[in-house]
Length: 457
Ligand SMILES: *Cc1c(COP(=O)(O)O)cnc(C)c1O
Image (cartoon, rainbow, N blue to C red):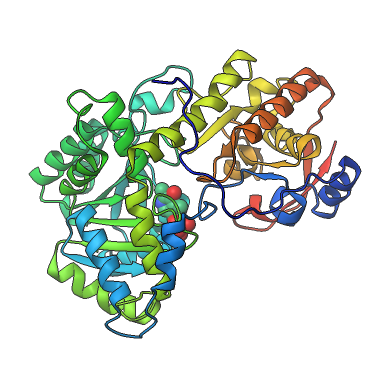
């Protein structure tokens, strides 16, 4: 056996990747008000803003797209989609949606009432927003290890079962229409959830007759972590592990833009016939007829092929090797990052990287912008800009953590691209004392990180 894990694909179609001159990058960043969300993607060389919908499709997916049947109703493309999603999830009812958040919106509108409480290990931001929009209290109940950035643990994405029981006792079964479990736990850095934790969450909820819904966006990456780290699963296939994960829940939402290996798509699946009736009515109202749910027939075909490819062990080996490769190189160069790395991204600790920049001068933004200026690399801040808030006296409060996320698109970049990223980080680390913070010169009322303007101090 060779030690090098190679990309399990070769490249048939290429897309130009240009490195524009540094002076041009400086101009572009100023035009974008120093906010990388406002940059045109053509001015970015390596785009690590997100792993959502940014992956490359396989020859089999592109071929399947030609088979897309665009009939309004009864399309065989839907039947293939339905059969595949049922094969993986074991669910009776399968509804396609245009994205994950559409599935969440339908779930929130149909199955909750204002004043309800929905616990989760960690709600993703669109999930939280969909619940809060309908007056539901969305609670994060991550395990203690998940809150500790320093100490490695195998399943830092787990649900805190003691807190879950406290919440159930506090609010009562009547106010908790269901609980959720997110795999992998995106908000806590793509950290995995163990099968034992899924099983125990299910058992606890069953005692109180509360259903469990999985946010399954990265179920295949989570299955890989279970196979690698949890006792008793080393010889179980990723497909069988995924089947078991879904067997412990009553319903699931998914963004197929993650482990569906497509650029657009999602689903909402469930066992219960009453839930399915509600979902169906709302799907038709908001997304489209039940046999396409806001997607084209060709999108359904591509997702049905892609989601099976995500369960291919060679693909998952490669996927995790890319993230580990980046993390290992950072370790060797003393670039501070959150350990252990999760499935889809590496999180740099900007507070430790730039200790001279105080939180309210946004060290995360300083690093994000430096990565762009130095290497044309686009990343995202998860710190005081994204999570900071104003207290009752109107005083800005920083976030606990100042992180910069390098999210890795699936099957897009090769090892030399990763070497280039590492080299850029290394150069920045050497010159870090010269980096300065930023101040905000314009911000909208909500979700300010997307559109606010910065000025260098
Ligand atoms: C991306 C994501 C969503 C939302 O999916 P969209 O397709 O972007 O609407 C929900 N939950 C998690 C965990 C995600 O990563």
